[in-house]
Image (cartoon, rainbow, N blue to C red):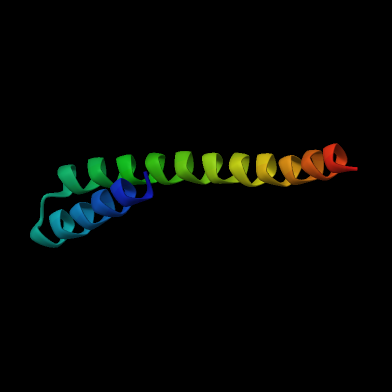
Length: 61
């Protein structure tokens, strides 16, 4: 998902440089949404991973 966010950000930069402001704004909006979805999923996985390590230690004791 982060890969697609970076691709849309690059498309936005190129479109903005060439004067296609509508396309640039749309691609920037999509990139922003994808980045925040990626960030939320990454945080959820980090929390689940931390909780999983604690659960595994409790199970081994």
